[in-house]
Amino acid sequence: MRNGSTPTFLVALFISLLCSDLALGQSYEFSWDRATLYSIATDQFQNGDPSNDPTDRRSDAESLTTESARPVGGDFAGIVAKIEEGYFSNLGVQAICISMIHPRVSTGDRYSSVWSLDYTEIAAAYGTVDEFKRLIESAHEQNLRVIMEVALPERGIDLAIDSLSVDRGPMISEIFHEKWGESGSAVTTSLVEFFMRSGHPIRSEYAAIHWLTHWVRTFGVDAFHVGGAEMIETDVLSALKAEGIAALRKWKSEHPAKSKDELDFWLMADVLDHGPVKSAYHDAGVDATTNFGFASGEDDLESIYADYSATIAADPTYNIVSFVSSGETTLGERRDLFRAGTELFLLPGIIQIHSGNDTAAAFSVGSRVAGDSLSPMNWDGVDEEVRIHWTKLAQFRARHPSIAQGVHEKISDEPYAFYRGVRIGLDVDEVIVVIGAAGRVRLNVSRYFPDDTILRDAYTGKITMISYGEATFETGDHGVLLLELVQ
Image (cartoon, rainbow, N blue to C red; front, side, top):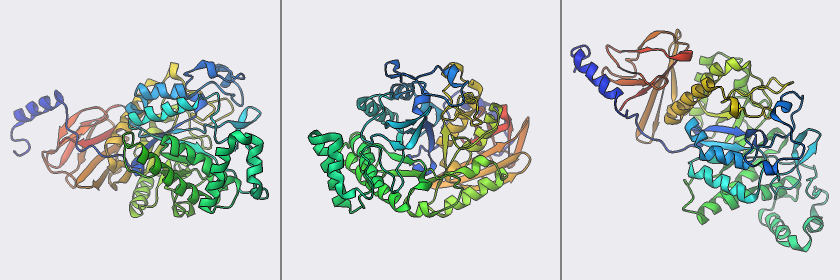
């Protein structure tokens, strides 16, 4: 059939396609290199069990009118409820990152990330060990990976748990006896055995590695997100990665029915002001570093997309995690979330959603950070237009590895359009994206697809057939076209 020869047949074909399930190609296995992460500030996310609320809890309204918000009662039960209702899966997320679970030293209204009181315990306000286990199991049942945010003490800094330091290393058994006594002998012994086996210096950061990887070994935690990694020696990060790999392999060998894959433990390092460049952290075994360069918005979008695509594709040991806002970056007013979401979800590499951005949660007073850790989630007042926009983009990204890993080629400037394509095994994934479109858009796509190829706009659900090298679409809201092949 040649284009234009049988218009009646084409109309019938379009109607048939619109009224049936569209085949949108291959389903791809999970890969960290193209993952969409969702970062959860546990305390601010959802209060699933009011019985464990901290005594100094303020109402959400009070939290938004104070310079520094106190705890608002979020817990593991609230996260599990959202996992089980399918919130993250429906959003197109592949992994959730849980903020630090351990009791920490309070400094006024806030908590110190370094001073964990006890790496072997869970903060009472978040729930119990059994509830944490249920969180991991519920996530895995939904095919979600779980990342724990962790912090390692700097070299020479005492652990709040036991005042262990370089100078007191030889006295480790005595130090632990002060906390656990004879009843804690197993914990004491395990740490002594760890130092003897590993040969690591008896220092606080290595003791923390042993305790933290216990959660991997026991519950099958998939990954760590190391906060404040710029303060940690790269040798320590290498040790954390190695111990994490050993711990997750052990868990998977003991729980084959619960293992979703054979992937190794994954490590992400939050390095303040780290940009989209390979660094000593990657060389030390860190799988991906945070990318503060994108949130700054300094370069034009095409240069960012082209640069990220080329550098990530050139080196399989290098990747970055980009975001539009966090506790350390700023974003414009809430109306910018449509633009920011569009640009974020179409980035090459790994991306991270910070809780609150997907629902357009309000700013905390005194903060210009969008959806930061001090802003309670607005489940009773979700901006549905923002949520739907982000969901469409996230689901498109989840279906198409070419977005994160594909070769990037610009098609046009006005409107801005580009192609991405990648081969995964025997399959090829290809998409075309348009940003800033309006009304009817006609694209010359003859370089990428032959005539009679059927394309679907994942944003509106509309389809078209390429004719004389061109694809024609009516643009939906927010000026985005997400074009995918109909198989």
